[in-house]
Image 1 (spheres, rainbow, N blue to C red):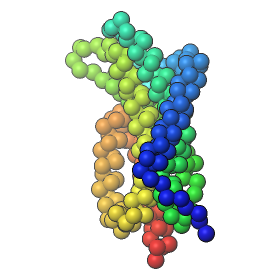
Image 2 (image 1 turned 30 degrees about the vertical axis):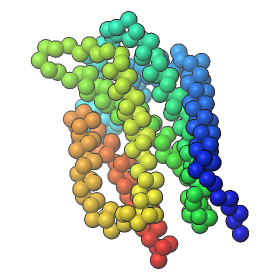
Image 3 (image 1 turned 180 degrees about the vertical axis):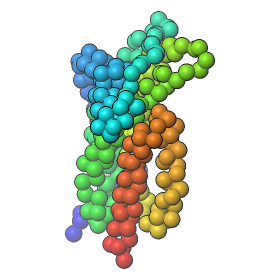
Image 4 (image 1 turned 120 degrees about the horizontal axis):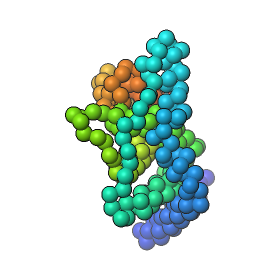
Amino acid sequence: MEDKKEMGFLDHLEELRKRLFWSVLAVVVGICVMVYFDQWLIDDVIMAPKSLDFITYRKFCEFSHWMGLEDQLCFNAMNFTLQSTTMGGNFSAYMLVVIVAGLVIAFPFVFYQLWGFIRPGLHMKERKSVNGIVFYVALLFFSGCLFGYYVLTPLSINFLGNFQFGDVEVNATILSYLKLVTSLVLGTGLIFQLPVVVYFLGKIGLISSEFLKKYRRHAFVVNLIIAAIITPPDVTSQILVSMPILLLYEVSIFLVARIERQRD
């Protein structure tokens, strides 16, 4: 028998305040950790995709040779430079890097606090059906961030940095470079939450496995279009980018079908 104590509106606000406090504190701690390791973060993480020695470029070139394509998938140039055009540009770039990095490493704890606020409002059966959700959300988020960092970021940097428009040279600001990197990493981390979102939508009956199967082709086309936009104009890169999203879509169909079987 579950012992429940009804909470009033002010009690919910107080609980929310505590959860927000611990979440903000976790982010601040994450930022402080990143400040301590700032040299490693900037040189070996943030600026690494700008170097042709980055692991992704090397693996693409090895894969190209293994496939007998010679140097077709090799990256041989970085025809752009980074600059700061304002007095506070470097400081703003530094703060952006440590804040985003702090958010990334604090994400599991922040979600844990959010889930701790939502969980008491669920029935016992509903709680059991989502056991381990914090672990799976964190796993998907970090998997997405790694995919965004090691695949999308270097492909996008190389393509955009080397794209020719007449005789215009690419002299990008450091902030534009950082916004590209952070948006791809964070964005992919959030996109990888697709199975979790679909699971809850299926749980409340807003979508069904038949609906997802019916529009599988549409999702496939949209995915390929997005992959074509953010990757260099070669089929191999587009397939590498689109495959994880398609896999997550199939996993989402499996999860919703499982919910339907349990419901029946």
